[in-house]
Length: 172
Image (tube, rainbow, N blue to C red; front, side, top):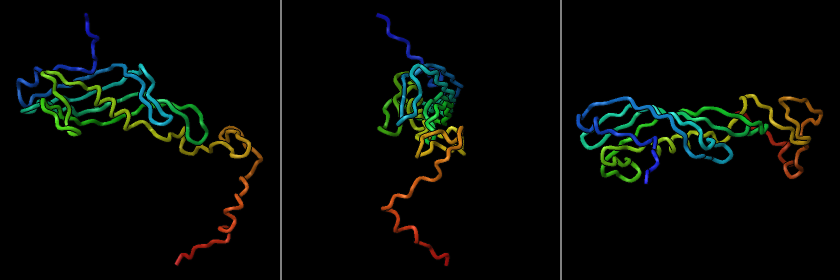
């Protein structure tokens, strides 16, 4: 039986033989879909991992960047938008990892997939905007105010908040 190739698993045998040695490792491979609220990295999207691997006495360090495409909807006008996220990473791999602090050095191999997955999840925008000055949808008629000017004017004030209309604040 042939085991499937895991593209994010890289050998560090050459580094472990010489403490202080380093090399650049670049991995471009697809990952499964990741999602935070309504923003997602589509499944099968290429994730770019570029790290400098450096050997330590008891392990290795990976320092570099993770880049991945994302897709979502503008939080104001609901227009579909896409982008590319970029996240800096710094991880330590040890044979006896400390929970929540270091990752597993499995013999002479390290797995960069958990590093890439975490970086993508942390960088996915939670409430993206199509542009900084997006006008959004009209709350009355629902048209996209970036494309059409509507005559609805301001939405009526909820009468429950009417008591606050006369409220003023002293500047002094």
